[in-house]
Image (cartoon, rainbow, N blue to C red; front, side, top):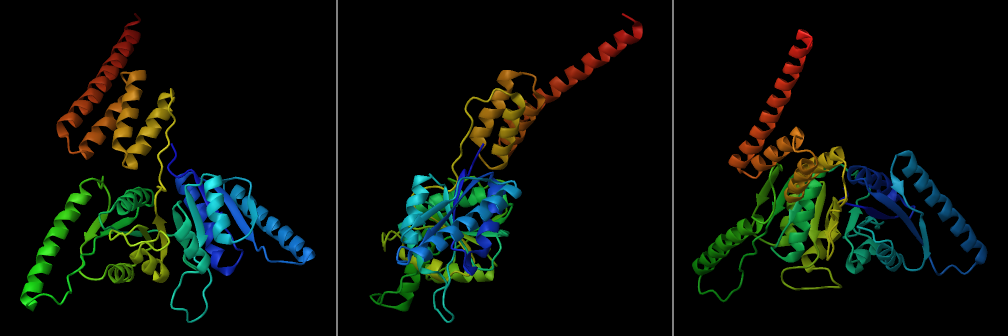
Length: 380
């Protein structure tokens, strides 16, 4: 079972990407992913000797990366060395190798810059259809708390679905944020009318938020929801600081339909100023469940079922537990797994049936062993 099969890591060999390799290794270990390193050389170097030196140096550094991956027990593919505009080459390579994710550093910014995101990183986010994971300089991938802002759009549905799975794998806390924008127009006849309108707006927003969350499996997660009032980008940034968020996960298409080079205006402001690492999703998921369809080994089936159960894929887990029973109708671990699953789904009657089945089989096995031992004692 794979959830995140392939990660394309962009290296510029600069200070800003020092944490990229270690973060890629950590992510690959958690999700059993394959890593593809890439570096893009400039296309404006005229001197042939300089071009040759740059090429050889880049290949040597890429080889160092693959050797490090091997030593860490992480799978890697042949490194990619390209020439051209970095953002265009990286976006194109991600499609060519069918990566689930582009992982890169936030880029170098000059001292005193208002924005903390480098130009290349911002352009990749703008142009890539693939999810983009940006690692902040000097910030280790130590994900204790994830923030996922939602605006009830398809993009935020995708972001939350991926955030839930990542929170399960990282065993981290998850905060789901839905900012309610208040009406500030001056056409109200009085402040009282405006306040009444905003209270109604907030009430409807809370109801919509609750309805939105009903479509997601949040069982066994350490999660909270927040519904602040105000400017979305400001509230997202303040929540990150207040709750010491380690990872921000958000969709890049805004509810308002505003689109600047395929990146919503709220996302654009947030990712430029956010102090933590972040993951943006546009039209593809980071998490893509890939199952082996012809598993016949009961131990492997049961192992996969337990992994699916832990990751919150309950229907798939149910199918795998039942596949175990199709192979062996007395497979006690499968009955116990189904009982646990139905308890999580708040279906105690079904859970009781499978738990009783497991007990009956265990009792039958125990009595059979007792009878066999008694026969041995009698010499029959």
